[in-house]
Length: 197
Image (tube, rainbow, N blue to C red; front, side, top):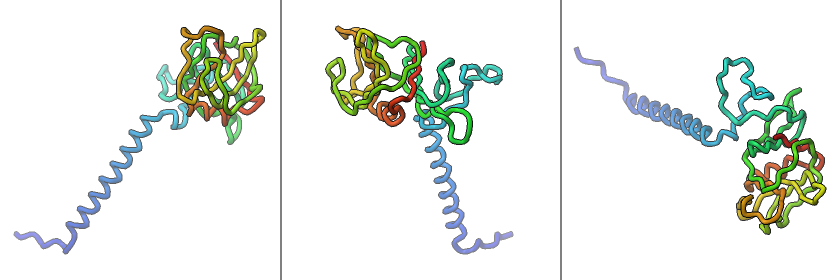
């Protein structure tokens, strides 16, 4: 028995729909792979402030590391000496709670500030670091009794300090220029800086 002839142009419609469907699938696959390449840009994974698993049976959640325990509450910069990392923590817009707006690695110098609570005391858009490198977006939060200045900054040339090669004590904490921009926008004068071990 012969098949009935198909409607004129129906093969082109099916082919067009197939191509469109494949394009949509490819677009979503591209978005998924781009999200994997930039995990910090995605919303942070929910985690307990104490770093425990919140009763999930020990399953680890993917995403940025949890804010260190005992690092205060409210809007603040958290700096972990051991993890060599910074968390920019803000209050949630929709009620109680907190949101990590950014977290990243930093490059400390040879001298570290004592653990404790500080606040941003001064800021400088440009200057020269104690290592002689041109820097930008300096956010100072502590000056020790011996005059050592502790603060975050970014080198204009993208360099990071070499603690072993520093002849004199310096408390500069170097960031990438991108991270320095984030710190500059977040840490206005008076914003708490909590240093944890």
